[in-house]
Image 1: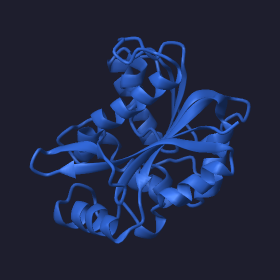
Image 2: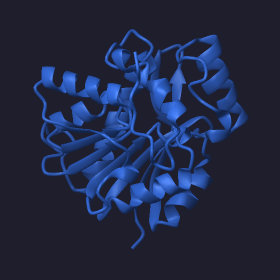
Image 3: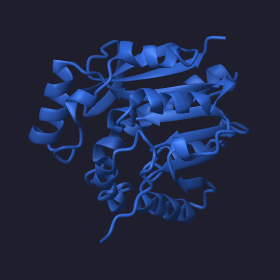
Length: 250
C-alpha cells in the first residue's frame, strides 16, 4: 500500500507521517496498538472541556456545553478527540497530514452520524485568515521538526479571545526511561521508534515559544499512569507527560 501525505510544511517530518499512517486502520481499536491513547483520552477530554468551559463561562456538565465554539484539532489522527467535542456541540475542524488517517476519521464520523470538517493538510497550509476559539496540539509538538515555527502558526490561528491547549513529553531522564524504554521496549504499548528523546520539549521551552506569541500559560498539569489502578490522572509531576493551557497576555 502506498501511503500518501501532505508534507510540504517546514515543520512536518515525512517519516513521522508515514509512521502514524501505518496505524490508521487501528486508531479506533481500544485493544490494538492505539490502546494507550484510548486509556488516556478521557483524561485529555475532561482537562480540555473544563478549561474551555471556564474560559467561555459554560457549564461543563451540560451535554451541549461547547455549542457555538470553533475548535481546531491539529494532528487529529482518526478523530479520537474530534468526535467527543463534536458531540458536545463544538464546530470541529480536524487536520492531519496523513491521507489514510483522514480517510479513517471521515469514515468513522460518517458511521457515528457526526459532522466534522476533516482536512488532509497541516496548520501551516491552512488559510491564514481562519481563526478558532480553541486550538489543540495534543501529542504533536514532539513529532515536528521545528517546534517554534509550528507553535507560531498555532498561535496565529487562535483568536485573541481564545485559548490553546498543548500536551507533550518533557525532556528528562525520567521520560527517557518511561516514555521510550518502558512504553516502547518493555511494555510495548507503542511501536518502537514512536518517540525520539531529543525532540521532547521542556515546560520552560514551551512557555518561551508561547510567550513570543503573546500567549501565557494559565494552567499546567502533569499526566501520570498508575499501573495498579490501570489509569491515567493529573498530577503536579511534569517530568514525563504534561498538558498546558495558554491564553493571550494582552
